[in-house]
Structures are given as structure tokens and as C-alpha cells.
Image 1 (cartoon, rainbow, N blue to C red):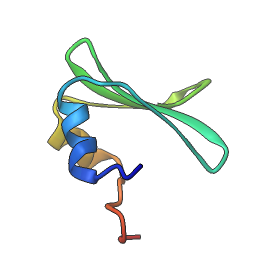
Image 2 (cartoon, rainbow, N blue to C red):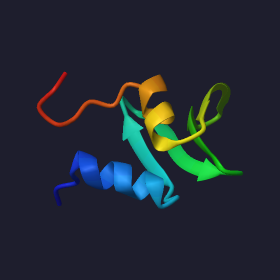
Image 3 (tube, rainbow, N blue to C red):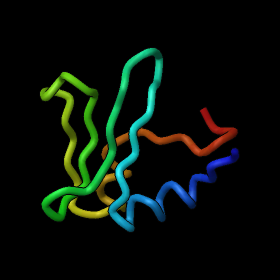
Length: 68
């Protein structure tokens, strides 16, 4: 299944939670209490919060496919 970057941003805008594994670590992205949040599971110090998708995505590095 192909998951496009645009679909990812749309899912975030709709408030969907996204759980994923990267380099054997589990991460969470979601929207709670009106703010977008990102963190590594079991590490509260890794939390990043943004007010909306644009501000949130500017605070974390998310590469579109084909970009590194």
C-alpha cells in the first residue's frame, strides 16, 4: 500500500493518530487538546507540540518520498 505525503498531512488535519516504527523505535503523531503532538513512545522528553499542521510540520523533519 502506498501512503502519499499529501494523504499523511490530510490525516493529521482530520485528527487521526499515526503510530509508526523508525529505526526500531515506536513513535506517535496525533492531535489532542487542539494541538498536534509528536513523541517517541516511553520518552516524554521527546514531545514536540504545534498549533496546526503547518507549524507542526515545520518543527519536525518529515521527508517526502524520494527526498532525504
